[in-house]
Every structure is written in C-alpha cells, then in structure tokens.
Amino acid sequence: MSANENTEILDAVLKAEKFLKQQKDLYGNLLYKQNIKKEEEQMSKKNSIEAWQTTSTLEELNSKICNCQKCSLGATRTKFVFGVGKPNADIMLIGEAPGADEDAKGEPFVGRAGQLLTKILEAVKINREDVFICNILKCRPPNNRAPLPEEMQTCEPYLKKQIEIIKPKIILCLGRVSAQAILQTKETLTNLREKVHHYENIPLMVTFHPAALLRNPNWKKPTWEDVQNFRKLYDSLSKKN
Ligand code: URA
Ligand code: URA
Image (cartoon, rainbow, N blue to C red; front, side, top):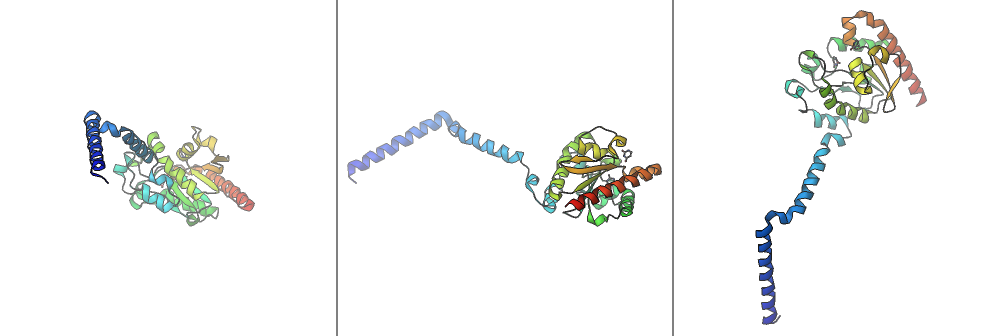
C-alpha cells in the first residue's frame, strides 16, 4: 500500500468518524429507535405467553402456577390446592374452592365434604385414587365465602389447562358454582342436573356439592341417582374405546 493510499484511507476513516459523531449529537438514541421498537415488541410478545401455558405435564404446570399471586387469595391462602389424582385419569371431578382443611393440607376434598365424596364414589365403585379431583379456585376464599366472579375468571385458565393435559373421558361437576363456571351458564343446579353437557367435546354431568348434602340430607337420594347415571354414561363410553 502506498503512502498516498494510506493517507486516503485515514482521511476517509476520520470523515466517517466525524459524520457518526454529528449524527449521534443530532439524534442521540433515536438512531437506534427501530431496534428499540423491535426489542419492545419481542418483550411484549414474550410477556403475553406465560410460562405455564406451554407446559405439558401436571407436575410442571403445578410448579409454574403454585406461587400464583394473580388475585388477592394468593395473599391469604396457606397452601395452593392444585388437585390430586391420576395424571391420565378417565374421570375428572371438579368442585368449587378449597376449604380450611384443603387449604391446610394443599389437597382438595380432604375435609368432611371430601369424606362424603369418597363414599359417594365408592357407591358406584369408583376408586378415589383412579380419578383426578380439583376445584375451580386453587386457593381458599377467606372464611369460605363464595368465589368472586373475577377470582373464577382469573383462575379458570389453570383448570382448562389441567383438562387439556389430563384429557379425561368424562367430567363430573360438583355443585352449581363449578358447573356454571365451566359451562359458562347461569342455569340453576336443578336445570343442569340429569342432563349430559359437553365441555370441549368431553361429556360432563352435574350433581349436588357434597357440602350441600351435609347441610341438607334430602339431596342425598337425588345425588345417588346422579352418580348412578354418571357411572352408566362412563361405562358406555369405556365400551366404545
Ligand atoms: N369443597 C370444594 O368445593 N372443594 C374442596 O376441595 C373442598 C370442599
Ligand atoms: N346449591 C349449590 O350451590 N350446590 C349444591 O350442590 C346444592 C345447592
């Protein structure tokens, strides 16, 4: 390279440097605005898909949601009550919300209502260990007050993901609150019972909540009839597959 060529190159570099400095003084970070915008778009995309939404096992889902603070129940719960049972259960039972016993243990239906539920299942030869049991709300409402609509709305995506992973053949809703939430209806329990509904093509039946039977034993007989019908429907589905 000749001395002349060297000088030309150095000259060009100095000019370029001067030009860049001018641009920087004039526009500052605006120079990079396009990139900043792209980064912001990528961040918001990332944020709109939450980590739990892409999980494919119950264990992973539980680990990703068990510290949930999306509603105020996160502050008052003792334990997050994800649900228990077989990960590939044919039958899924869905209640309302954890009570005091469930909140303490971190497991659904372990109190008095739960013990009655176990008996109801035994009556139609369904083993509690063979099903998956959970609730609409994963956290206990203080003093067992009824779940608020916004709490149910916030929590329901977790239940939907559980159903998506478990892929049950049949669902039993325990009580009006659970059925109304999943079926997106305001129908009374009376109108929801004794029918086969569907959630995402999965047959779904509705019966009384076991806690309601503890308050009003007159509802025991119709519950027994409901679960007999539920068992029959389950048997008919099992034969097909
Ligand atoms: N009632 C419910 O709805 N769920 C429980 O887990 C316990 C009581
Ligand atoms: N009312 C309810 O909300 N649930 C029942 O199971 C019975 C009466």
